[in-house]
Image (cartoon, rainbow, N blue to C red; front, side, top):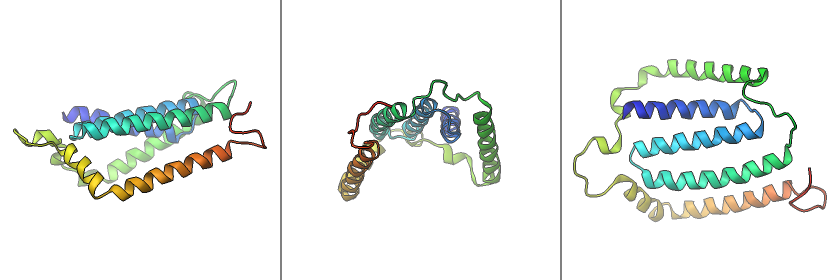
Length: 173
């Protein structure tokens, strides 16, 4: 299980490097899908499959909206790919920065930090993710309301910004 979690962690970091290197919106959206998949895989490995499923569905819905806006507003005939010089240079710089940061903080990690939720016990009466969901709705209910309000406000801001000059939200680029 430790090897699987290491693969998820490396995939998560490499996906973040792809997003941060700022290629064309098409490849940036692909990097976001990889990041969300690897992050949700890490959540599944640590004993939260329900939370992972919910987050993955929310991420995919949000990324679909972001990809539609970015593809409509930045229609390039020759998009910048991951193999072009400037993007490859950014990927190299970010990879070196992540490697240096990992080397600096390497001494604080130990073997028990990779233990997953179901690895430490034989017979559980309830799972950790169901308790977490119940706690999120009981103690964090107001935070969910605030989060929903912020997402609604963000939707209106994006619609207003992409409206253009008296043309509405949908326009030809």
